[in-house]
Image (cartoon, rainbow, N blue to C red):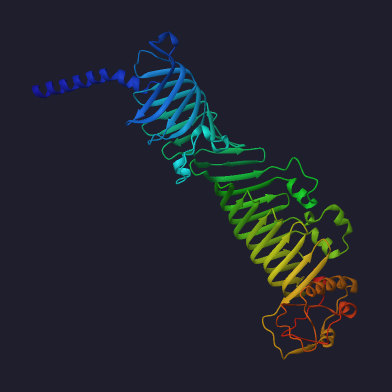
Length: 511
């Protein structure tokens, strides 16, 4: 029993002694606060301190005044002239460090900065352009290739190769500034920056906010997550040369919200890939879908999956001068109606001024429904083209079927074509019989005359010849028409070989 007590006493004494002797070590290891200059023991002018990890260069600090105190492991500087941080392979990843109030702990291999930190994050050349063969040094990189970082505080851990920025953090590249709501963690070996507690990114043209961002510095690629909102601001300077329709569009902000996004740059192409609960809104317009790609360089946006488009009206299709000249009452009425559109895919081609809907397209207004395989809107000319299995239903009474429908909104003209699936050379149908079989429209011959003149001038360019014995198996399109136009404008042979005729009543009134 006595022996046990003695052993216990000895162990306790050893623990107390070891703990007492370890106090200076732990104080040196964790101590980072700046000491007053009166406590200086060693001072170095115009000096450089270099840190190594497993024999490889880890960091380097240059200052006009570095000093230490009682601790031989702590070094302080009030002003850093330049600094550099390297990955585990000794490759530079953070360049041009400038700061105030620096403490270096050589025992724990850490650096603490408490004021005015700024530096550049660099893409590693061997990772970004592997196989090029030429070395691009930090001083040769343009500022647009770097990410400028700023913060009030920095903590760098050489052993784990992690850098933490906090308080008033900013990351700037080209004209955009990212402001994390709290902090940024940088993995210096992977060269990846993590923002986990919210961020706002802003430039002169747009604003982006979300919950998380991961920046892959070597790849010029960023991933964004959670409650993402992209806002493009209205244009401040509008070119008088652009058409009135485009002016109307750029006068208003455009907002895109989604769950996830990837932004990447390569070979001068800037691309944003979005997914999850996508909602694109502008004044009076809303578009939704599953997945999207925006090519900023080519002004091209593609949205795929469960597309819906909600338009409060179609008034934006016309400039004010054209609206005053409109004669067609049906078109005037359509401009003020809400429009609902569904499709599998939608493409906005800004450079070519085209909007295209693909797959199971349905366009619904109060008095009509149009379905097609593909619909193209030429923004510059306000020409609408419907292709494939086109069907137009007007107030559940008039119905039109065709393979190609063109609507010239500006000129109030309609073009209708039928693609035949087969041609029978022995089947003949008299034009006179066709005229008498059609249900007549109450529209004026003048309305139809514009339509037919344009139609036949189109086919004249194909050098097509008509005669009593001519076959039209090579002739891709035919026309559905009513009587008043034929009587005064058409001069064609008495018989044309066809395989089928679809008689439509009141074609123009469908629209």
